[in-house]
Image 1 (cartoon, rainbow, N blue to C red):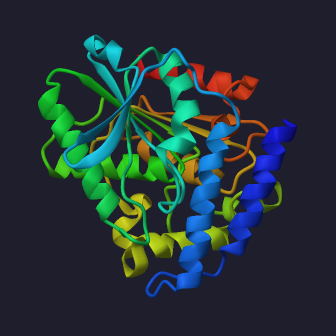
Image 2: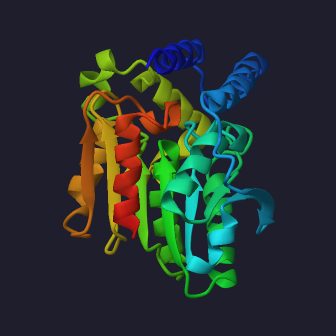
Length: 298
C-alpha cells in the first residue's frame, strides 16, 4: 500500500507540473515535460516483477508495433487485444509488461498489446486508425476467433471507438469488452470531476482537459467516445474505483449502453484509485477485478 501511495503522489506531482498546456502549438518546454513523464511512466512498470512463465514476442501487425503475450495459447481461438491508458500521450509496453504478463497468465489467453502512436506528435485520429488496422488484420489472419478488447483509462475510450470504427468498416464486432477506469467523456462534463476530486490524487479535470486538447485539438467532439451513438454494442464490463474523477464516465456509459446491450455490467470498487490493478496486481481488489474480467469474457 505504501508503494502504491508513493506512486500516486509521484504521478499527481508530475501531472500538476504539466497542467495548462494546450494543443495547437506545442512549445519545446512542454515537449520536454511530456518526454520526461513518459520516461517516468515506464518506471511504474517496475513496481512488481513480470510473470516469468509468460512468453513475450514483439511483432508488427499492419505496420503497427505490437507485443504478443502467451501466444502459445493461440489455438484456443480467443485473442485478447489490450489498449493501454496514459491520456493518449503516455504509456508504453515497458510500463505495462509486468501487469499484462500476470493478466495473460490469469486469463490463460494470448494477449496482444498494441503500441499505438501517441499525441501530440500523432494526434487524433492516428491511434484510432492504427488500432482499426490491427483489428482488421487480426480478423483476416484468425478467422473464426473470438476477440475481446480490454482497455484502461484512455484505452477504454479507444476500445469504444474501435467498436464504432469496426461497424463502419463492416468488420465483425468484438465478442466482449472489459474497461477499467475508462476515460470516455473528453469534454469533462461529468459531476464526478468535481465530487471525486478530493479523493483522487492522480487525475483532475484540468489535467484531462489539457490532454484531450493535446490529443484532438479542435476535434474534441469527433474524438469523444461519449458522443458516439450505437444501435448495437458487444457485451461490456465496466470496472471503476469509487475514488476517481472518472467514476461517472463508467457509470454514465453503462446507463447509456445497458438498454442497447442487456449483458452490460457495471462494478464499483470501494476505495480504489484510477486503474488500481496497474499499481499492484496482487492486492485483493486487483485480484477480484481480474477474476471479474475472466468470468465475464468466457
